[in-house]
Image (cartoon, rainbow, N blue to C red; front, top):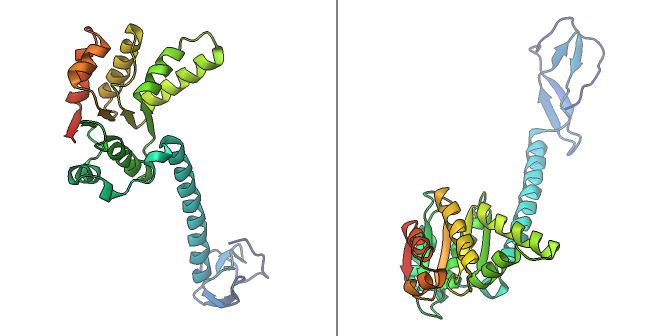
Length: 247
């Protein structure tokens, strides 16, 4: 509503009892209102009826919602590989569907999905991540074991650009509201890599930032891959701070 200078009316400040009529500039309909008088001049005459005002507000909100929805879809396309983007519930087991529906990140506990190959562990994990990505307020990241191993190695690369990119990627994994580590037993870890991997798990569990992880390999094999000093503590951390689903 804009200030409208009218011919002076009775002196004083307030809202006279009489009602007045104005015309809605949007639909041309009538508006009945009580005038506001400041220093003897009518101010803030309405120029839009309640119906048109509400319609405009809903339109603005809808455009904002559509923009946010589009942004979330674009972000999800960046996080989720195309192979797992079109998963249908019927493709998953009852136990997997129940976990997708029931798990929440609020308590800070993650999810561990273990089992043999072709049990749709990765699809289940991405469906959990997808639910909370679109729920809003959750910044999600995902990486598989091979990519994680490479990023850990490349943060010490001689090439500055490669080194910086890897460090930024690892920082994103640390800070994400929810992190998916897919096929954690697939990467090859040096002693330094094992230390970095343990550091990532320790950082997130200490701050109650959930990790969703999948594992094909036996836990004993993963422990051996990570080394004597860090293997057992890393696996123990993952199990302690996760609900485990065996497929």
